[in-house]
Length: 443
Image 1 (cartoon, helix red, strand yellow):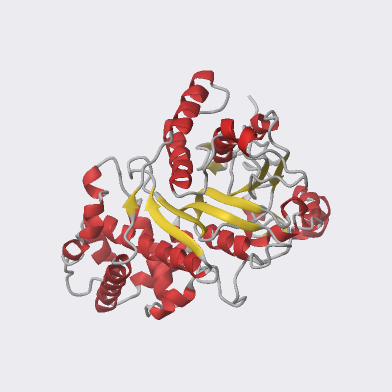
Image 2 (tube, rainbow, N blue to C red; image 1 turned 120 degrees about the horizontal axis):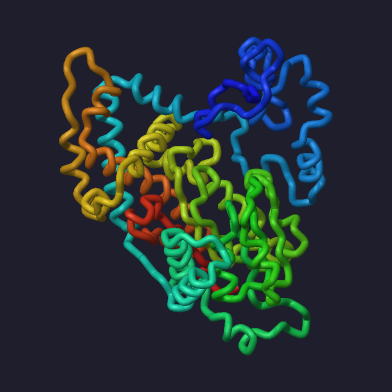
């Protein structure tokens, strides 16, 4: 029987499979004696090495070659979309939670009242509506894909993709089906393609673009994703003869300069994304609107359809509309508290529709007025644990609304007609906010 390292890997729910060091129960990666001597790799901090081996490791680190290749690309610009203030620290979820727990009971209650009042004021003119849409062409596509089993298929993801595309269509961002494109929009004599390109941010495996291309016929495709994925839709997209350009950009949105991509220069494009986590939505908006006023030279977004999520990960440094927050009296520490509280919206079983309907938000005056009392000596941590589930879910949705409405207002300030809708029911996904926008005047 071969001996294996006894270090338990909780994410894989098994022990490490490496061979242990001589006279040890653990391998070199998990040897407790060496653990104190390990330091993060400066190229890729997701892994660590022995401090004495760092210099030699950096020369052969697998990430070194990819990093050098990325930095040589013309569209790579370190931190180009990161934010104006380079001194603002990154705040972890644990730090956000601890800051809330350190509040006094009165301070926490005042924060809840402030959040409620801000939400009431901004939703008067920015009320979100349910917009669960599935165009016939998308529904037919999904049924065909499910039957043929050419791509991995999960109904809940297909419904989300179809509704994103459907909302783009009813909002006027998409107007023509694929069978109309060839006759109505042939390639012009100048060689310019009248059909906009699509840039999918946080593309993952690229299945949202897959549905969009198959149903509406896009000729240029750019998939932005910092991670590498197997079983991605790229294989199927490459077989689509209508696509002229298919490029996967393995890069962080924070470092992406779209204006440096030659194939996009001076062209309109559709910016899309399904579940753009936390600050990635703000980075995407900065990326899309950087230099968009000069449309003769730079790429510019003809339309947007961005599904936001993971608001608890948002950061003050990256948030796109700090002016909106400051005008409402929200400080940096209060913003981080709002982002942490937003996680309560998804921290429950949403198959119970009574916790997810619009009535939760509409009646939040009653739901948030019944915050439990605490005994003497008990703090905010005890208070939050005593809060009813309805109160926590309500507060989470309210915080999500505040964050996304600020983004909506920022897009409108940049000259676009925009809307914020709930594009799927919460039992499909409680992360159901979709920001859609288009230029008011045709370009």
